[in-house]
Length: 202
Figure 1 (cartoon, rainbow, N blue to C red):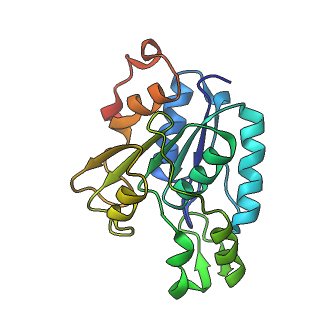
Figure 2 (spheres, helix red, strand yellow):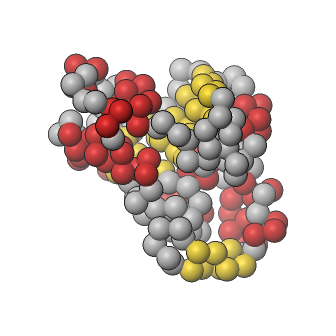
């Protein structure tokens, strides 16, 4: 489906996150809600990837939009299926960062509690792919003020891709709504459809 989008949320996040809601709002205003999926991902990577594979099948060849850990998932899936991906403050090698986080976790949006185990970490490691080298298929949006992930890891890993690095900001990516025209364009949605939307009001 041309112009379809699969939004992939991050670690302990949910479809209720700000970026996801802004994207849902815009696609609804465009009458394109059926071309967007924002699945509530299972906390275990293997089950999450299964959900995302299903969504890709339903959407055709969507643009993958991944935030944080969702960016890691999006990279794996984009490489597996030859899809385009737009990554927002993506996690690089997240399995190397979870050593100190094993144990009880809580989803920031749903209040669900779950146990982060060595099997989660092993499953994440299995998803790692060589650094992508296709600036036509990848856009990587980074903010240097990201307090959760060091943006320089992504800058290095995705150095052969199209990088957009903004000074300041934070892990949630400040000003995401104002950047949505670039996202929609990358997804193949014509500017004539959204030029009347005031993205500063989202």
